Length: 100
Image 1 (cartoon, rainbow, N blue to C red):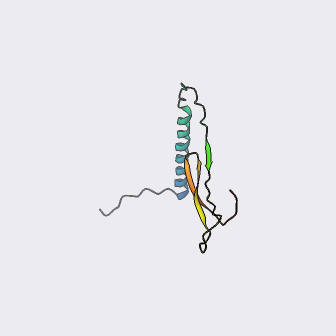
Image 2 (image 1 turned 180 degrees about the vertical axis):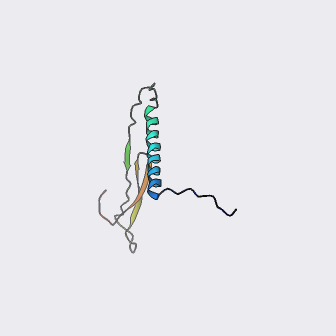
Image 3 (image 1 turned 90 degrees about the vertical axis):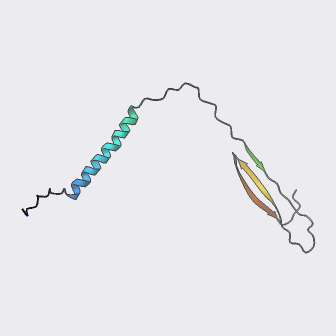
C-alpha cells in the first residue's frame, strides 16, 4: 500500500546534449535540403536596365565683406547636399575675405 512506483532513470547530461545537437543539426540540414530541391522561378521578362544615379551638389554661401561697426562677423547659410534622395543640410560660416 505504501509502495511508490519505480521512477524511470534519468539520462546523463552528456546524452541529453548529444541528442539536442543531433536533432538541431538534422533540422538545419533538412531545411537546406528542402530549399535545394525547390524549383527555380521561371524568368519571363528581360532584366530592366540599371537605374542611373544623378548626384547634384548645390552650395550656397553668403560672404559679408563690410560688416556694420560693432557687430561680430558671422555669415551662415545652409548648404544643402542632395545625393540620391536623402537631403542633408550643413551650415557654413565665413569670417571675411573676398572670395566670390
